[in-house]
Amino acid sequence: MTKSTTSVVQLRDGDEDSGGDPAMARRLLGTRLRTLRVAAGLKGYDVGRAIGASHSKISRLESGLLGFRLPDLEKLLTLYGVGDAALRTEYVNLARQANAPGHRHIDVEVAPRWYEPYLAFEDSATLVRSYSPGIVPELLQTPEYARELLSIAHPGAPDDPAHTELLERRQRRLTGPDPLRLWVLLEQSVLRRQLGSTQVWRDQLGHLGRVGELVNVTIQIVPDHVCGPVLSAVPFCLMRFGNPDLSDIVHLYHATGAQFLDRSSDLDAYHSIWDRLCVKALEPERSTRIIEGVACGAAV
Image (tube, rainbow, N blue to C red; front, side):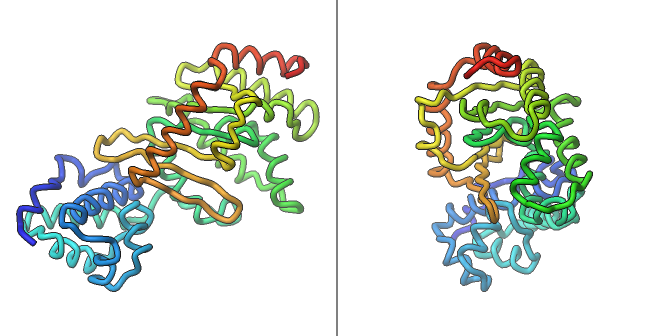
């Protein structure tokens, strides 16, 4: 191991300050430490043994899903040949920010704890690309539609206004200052899947049409014959961030948890799926007309 490794990853000015956002600080730190590990020619299990951690924990640390214990960070910096005292201090400061309490803590009665990293990443993203094979995605749901989904997924659960408050808080990013760019691929079959009363469904379709007119929102319908679920049977989101050092991240949601993927091979695969779906999907203007037509009672 030579100290030349330390020149591979230099913290840029301002990297130790990621807007006070612990989630993004964890991602920055994890990304940089992964780059150091690769430059050092080490595998995840080698690093895990050095700090007494499993390979999966190293993967989660490098993906920004866990905070770093400072003694472990010091061991890693030494292992990777980072000897410069000032640079080590910058890494430690970034780790302290990453370990700070977040401002997006959510009640486990409102959403499961594993959902918190997703909310943090969504709030920090500049672009979210969402493929929704079965339902209208959350950022485009009306409160009434969301309640219908919740009643199906969790029969007997009380109608908690906190669910609506969380949903509306997230959706405000679409219309606030520096709005989130949202690009949604919506399966055509979703437009035939009425949930709740006719009024709830019409209101949801009307809301889709209105939000689709925002300059920062793109909605494309994926026709049935494209067979989108064959390419991806589960919903996924591709998130992009303003910091050039942060790669995209893929979020996969399933019934009991979620996965975050940021390996280049995974990103390449999901970018390819997204591109293939986009090519086959209807253009946004036609998609909007179809949604408006369905809201007025036309068949689709």
